[in-house]
Image 1 (cartoon, rainbow, N blue to C red):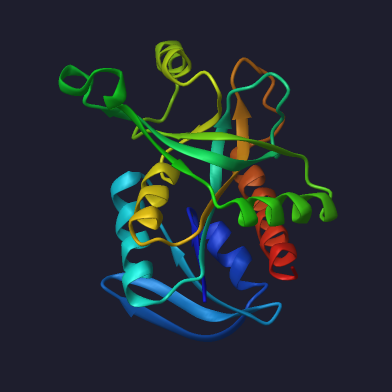
Image 2: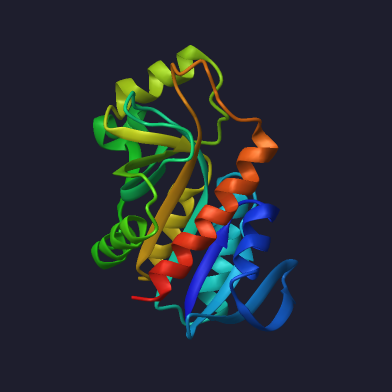
Length: 224
């Protein structure tokens, strides 16, 4: 069974629309939706905002079900000049960028880094190509910070210059997946890009389009 975590209600609903739903279940306060996508058994859960809720939902999924993979979709802010709104970032690494024990561990205590499953990554790349979705592959940086200040951006890029986007859940989900030895993939749709001051889309409109795009990507992946 494949676990899918989505960050927003609009994303959950878009994925439900491509599922053949078998049942819905409330477990430890979280809504789990069971069904199939392209004949693949899946369980869908809204992960919520921030690393704490994301780690809780990932832990519940991994303890309740024997997962063959864990896929997380959501939104992020882009960090590279060649990116545009509605592009996606496919993780090759996931970093908890605000983790810092450097006063006692030195440089080794800055950030927790987790690898994406190679097969899931390649499957996602092929799905993006087939769906004609513009994609980037790179490091997804997680922090319990909604980055809105230049100093936030400068601090992140000083520590993790290869970061392709910034968001608030993927690093925690990556860590939980690695603890449970479950292959993991994080995919983020870009809602804005740093230093691009002409954001072309109002957010609620963006969220609807991005959610349908994420569902299309998931469906294409399940065909593999």
